[in-house]
Length: 284
Image 1 (cartoon, one colour):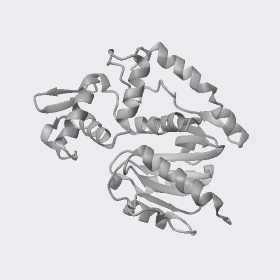
Image 2: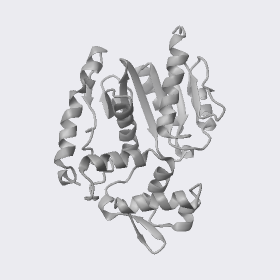
Image 3: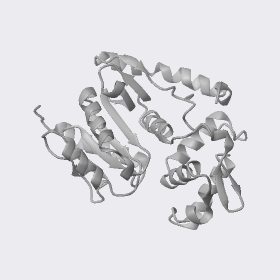
Image 4: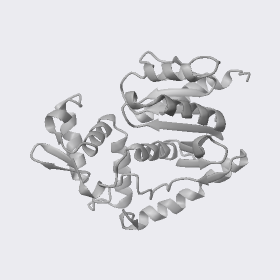
């Protein structure tokens, strides 16, 4: 799990990322940065370092594009965190067999998984990865950097924020502070205390946009219901689309799932904010 997993190109990209003034922008808004996770050399984030057929930049791009696909993440999560996964189990998770075959081929080609007959396992090289959460956080931060070309970090610790100030993702969009808290497990496993802490961090950091992103295509009404019970007054979180994939309320709180994709979900939040929410007047 050492530095040998990171190429010279990874190190160069790390140095370049530090030039985007992320820390300076926090300081200008009165925040003291304690630390953030490395942008491209975080050992808890999955990298395609075993695929030597591609250059480092190509490997990074390939994994970023793959990880943004909902089916890819579902398969990766299932195989990584089960002792073994049968083809039949994986098939039930996909919309069609062709999509399953395509994703399995890519997972195998990139040496993320291995198979023994019709059973699939995590590659031993990734035995240190025990949680998909850090990779999801990195992906969201990279989406802001890559798609929006704005400063963003994952694993951000700030003075004066609840629970040690540990924020999953912080980004600046047109100088607007955006906070994203991501949940990579089953929605039913999200505890009331985790939701309470999200609300507390959103209140302490008080960004213009505070997002709770639940990485599922399933219904998230139950989690929103709990958030509404935990909140003390103010307008409740209400659905903003027909699929109940995007909820908004309490001036700056947004809750989304991954339907139809992570990038689309984050874009929907920004679209709602810029088209409607920022023009509203709020009184504390």
